[in-house]
Image (cartoon, rainbow, N blue to C red; front, side):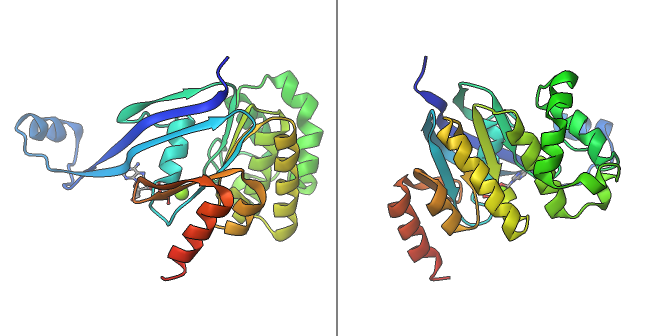
Length: 247
Ligand SMILES: Nc1ncnc2c1ncn2[C@@H]1O[C@H](COP(=O)(O)OP(=O)(O)O)[C@@H](O)[C@H]1O
Ligand SMILES: [Mg+2]
């Protein structure tokens, strides 16, 4: 058994941004064969390595566009890296973007079953956990309302409840905690702390440096797709705050 929950080595992520508009696939392939297509390459991650030990709570900080979400998507298996390897040991619950794994036209009740299935749970398991999910997300009165009528905070509540109700080995939280109101944030932090105490490995991206300082053992600072710093929470947060306060 590896002592690591996540072991990412030398990750590169390259996006191809097509500069031209093509009207259909046929035109695309003709241009491709004639080498008339121009691509802008964009390197979103440049040689990032990160090992997260089982039970560790790791924070990722960095300005917008620094590659945080891209990195989390690679760790969650949503993107395949252009280069590098990722090893994940254990079940993973990614809370990456608001609404990922939800169908906005379906009701909250329907989405609980849909999202549960996406997270790999049986209908029976979800039925057993249903009341707990509803209680945590505080959506009793809105169970039969389509998600498109929910506020972003309500969707975040449901997403967080779904991702954490069935104790994953690894929890990934991308900015979600900044969406809900203050009370819900506290509730989420309490649940993350409980999960930490039960040995769950957590990766958190948050704009709130206070939150990172409260929760994390270690912090990765990404800057323009590269590792600027990786180390103890206090040290990295201090350096990050000093640098970003100059803007
Ligand atoms: N699917 C994609 N196609 C092209 N570029 C992308 C894609 N996803 C992200 N990017 C670019 O990669 C960079 C990093 O994005 P992201 O990982 O979302 O940053 P962060 O989460 O730190 O704000 C950004 O410049 C973004 O525009
Ligand atoms: Mg992001």
